[in-house]
Length: 174
Image 1 (cartoon, helix red, strand yellow):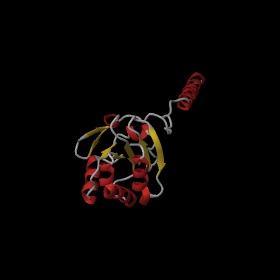
Image 2 (image 1 turned 120 degrees about the vertical axis):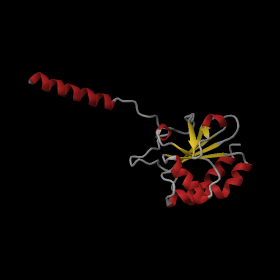
Image 3 (image 1 turned 180 degrees about the horizontal axis):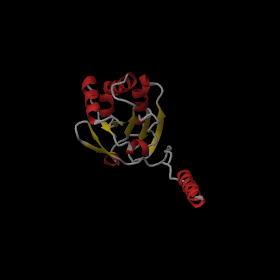
Image 4 (image 1 turned 60 degrees about the vertical axis):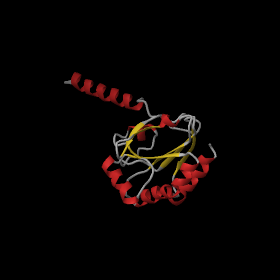
């Protein structure tokens, strides 16, 4: 009986140690290479961050939940300024852990005109360190230059100014 108890204590000890020393995702910082990803939009078209390398800056913005008030306001700000982004050759990619059908409804309900990508697996959100404890992404934007380097990280607090803020910064990277 004592041997069995010691075995369980040992297993518990090893489990705690392995958890404590488990590899944690590296926190992304300005100047680091942005993690590449391949995700699909609501219509099944694939997007990879690396496909824009050498061509244009990319705004990668993570949002919590399609159809919510804040996410709608944020997306509509980009929609309304989309012509400016296109003119300056700045790609915007919105990412959430929503499913493709949820994103498709969001796009249709708000006449959104730029790519929103589904990260239902949460893999990309976790690699960027934005996946929140509640099962949704935190509202964080990464501005990536045409060489794939993160030039700005914004913990978005002012949704109404988000589109202008990211446009102003990214347009200087051209």
